[in-house]
Image 1: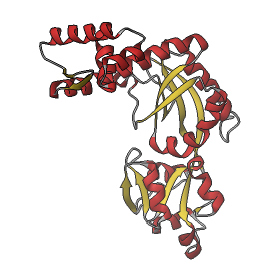
Image 2: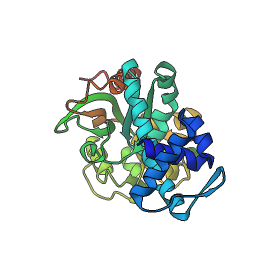
Image 3: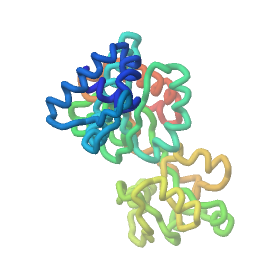
Length: 295
């Protein structure tokens, strides 16, 4: 490691003397460490031009390849040190639309209270804590995942939404009238509309199923553009409903989904300090939200 650090500093400063000042070593010590590294590799890493050193072609390649790992080692060391103060990092997997529309606007509040923790947000549409190495995830489901501890966050109130312009042209007074319009869907929930109609007493056919979208965000944009009616969790379109750009198509027909949003952590990791801070903040934030009063 000392040879690698000596090489990196010398490459960045193009000087053994300046590298020695940066590392709090003597110039001769840095020169010996670089020479030892060159002997171990069997190739010259620098061309010497008096007091100046310039990377060879293989030296430039070597610097490029080791810079990332060295930075990760530094970062990991700083994280380990920060644990003493209850800090560290949290790698969090989130659903893309939930992350962008609900979590991101609220995350600055977490940082203002816990500046010692860094939350790395990763987009996932599935739960893969074991494979991906994530510390925790926010997902939709029934709250039961093998080998994981779950914390309920938000219940889902599912509402049919339509654009303001389309709402001004039509008047939907019965559920049957929804059958006249293109019903937009999300790929991950292919039966959402059929289930929704069934919950409201309609079990017949004739659904005019429209385009499918990979993400709920795209479906919301499609509804806003007037492509049809979308079925979405109400809390994901709060801003549009408040601004009036989207309208609930049929106010008398709202559904509390059997699924909900959960914070999930692998069993045995629930006492990880950064997770504990994030969990307590998140649960405090969602407590009292509509629908969360149910057991």
